[in-house]
Image (cartoon, rainbow, N blue to C red; front, side, top):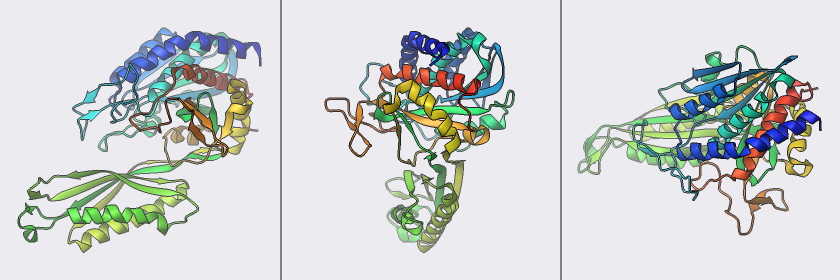
Length: 426
């Protein structure tokens, strides 16, 4: 480890208490996708106070990009990315700074809002990394981009947003990154880095199935066409789609929301099913979509209804290439120790950081933040007497504040190693 690596760690420790304060503020004041107004303002104020060369705002809604040009010659450019939006999920994690926010105007709402996926951690850790790296700018060769991305969880269906929209608006066109990097907090042991060569996260799309019948009074169903039985049959049928594709490549189709325009005594005209498809192998997505469309349209016809099926917000898989991982593992091990860098199984979660990694190359890993330990099979289990283990998007999801400084160190050291040519694929 060089003297500058030591300095990065020292500066990360010094900013640690402020990172915790940022995180707790963000956790208490979460904002949904494409509504991250106050979150973006907090980020912008901090980046401007850090004397960066440039702070770009209003990108893809409420995205922010900070540009830090190092004082040493160098052509490499690293994009450090954090997502900033929250979820329509109640906050039951039991901390004093829990969210009590309710968004009454969000499409489909009102919704309770919380950072049940840990984006408050991601944002605060990258803000801390901006402080650390700005403090050593004269020793940095090349450029660091601090990319604060809105709408990772997906914007409302009639709005644009997320990583693809940031790219469409040219947010990272000047200078063009030579590496993109980020990580996601997970229910793994605190301070552990999880990695996977290949697809770290799966491919995803949003599904909208609209069933149309004929509205009628509930007392005379034979005088109309009830779309609700067709909806029920489709809900049952999606559970069998996995048997129509290879059992060795996991897929899942989940319907998370059913929207009806009827009343207890009115058979409504339409029923809309909202869901998601996840595929561990990206090439399976088209086949699963075809199977779902066939199921929906033919089932609707069997009940004398019609169905339209739309696939929206396609997100490619997060794919880590072997050469990039080989380059990154020494840095990860330096940050947390050899025994705390562990391979993880694939997941059907998604993250549109894939848009950045696919375009520029780079890595995406996970950071454990819960009271867990690894069992004999290498999988996490709760620590006896701890707070338990709760998956992301669960109302009880939590993250340990003491782990945040590890994330700051990870960003800073990955950035420095890439800019100096240590973390590059061979």
